[in-house]
Length: 320
Image (cartoon, rainbow, N blue to C red; front, side, top):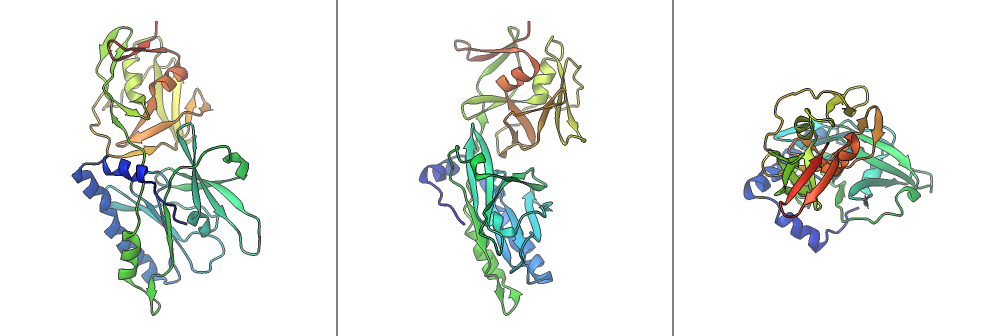
């Protein structure tokens, strides 16, 4: 069901993007119409659609279900850059789970929960929805798991009237897609703070998110590689997550300490983080395609101190 966007949230959207980024963000609409036409033309029983933004990056995802189908989502897709990409979808929830999504906030972290009532049952099932940009996974939870947390404004939109005489009607599909009003309160601004390592200034670009300084994890590994707090960063295929190894030399991959510019694409990172093989609960963000962590969380991970120098307006990293 569609939740109402608050006036404050709408104001946030209005002031965050330049004209070029707005134009780029809106290009998904026509591409979605074309893809939905293709899916429904191949099989008109695929005629129930949910549009939602599970990663809150401003570009929604679309999921298609079959009319009267008790269980399963037929297809899912989103848009990356200028390309429509398919989403790997779960087989353990019914499509209506995505028509009733509530978003909870836990310490600046968003928890997406879908609700379903299976056919021939009055039992309500709750699922935690996790979308990593390519794959949607679900975890069955109890309502008590999220009931202590406040909810935030969120939009998901459902429709099932897209056919005329048994065939998909482009005008109906376009009208549905055009009515979607996304909401993306995740914003990042370029940080004005200087950054010093053991008293020496280093050139590192960062972002401010929710009044905290976030830096690219590889940039911090790069500037600390010759200190006692050096660490390695890698992507672990077996764990399907970010692996951080303390007391290991950092492997330079190229692109470190480069400026990502204005934050045009911000989403909460869903990939797990492992420190010396142990999964840790740290909030991080994908900003313009790179992973950024709160500087104090990185300090907790690998073992250095962080101080703020108000006179210098500087973040002080101390490893000695």
